[in-house]
Length: 249
Ligand code: PGA
Image (cartoon, rainbow, N blue to C red; front, side, top):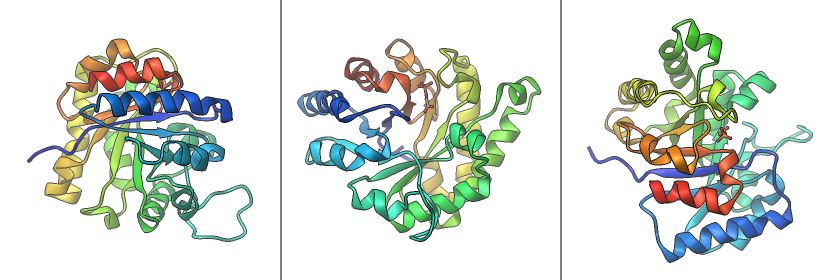
């Protein structure tokens, strides 16, 4: 079964003003000049989704959101519907990032509802899972991660475009990464669950690794079994670093 094209997605988190669009333009110009083997996406803060989509229109870099609400519309002050992201020009959305699971108490069921909303709006969800350090030290990594995969992906995604991102919570923004063996072990376990849940389609869904990916470790990580791309935080903010990772895919 041929794997889908890898995906390298940048997660800008709560970073970026209008002046940051130049970094994204530089990424898109380089991607267009030398098309990489991977799809490339940038997920800026919501305030920049429309501007970035306009700035990169017709270029080889997609734009994504970082979260959405499950409902279509309504009295939810401060929230953004999946349809609004799509209307602003996004084609993807990150969901269930550990910073949202931990900071906003997002459960697997809520993440699954959001993933359903993303599908409803025509967005490709990137659903994040990952264990805390305490869970890893307790030997619970595979149980936690496979449980999150089972609980966070609604059936409606069967046959539809989506990705899973494995991001160990303790590796995010810390400069620490699991060993290559540890990364592969979790990705293979996720693949098993995806195949069980979605059949042949589950064999092909990209499983991204995220957590302190940088140009110096990207090539080693990206060639591991069942690693189908990367979700990149800090190193996606500077075009030169992000391009180093894209070039390794
Ligand atoms: P990092 O973040 O690359 O800065 O570790 C990754 C993420 O949170 O998606």
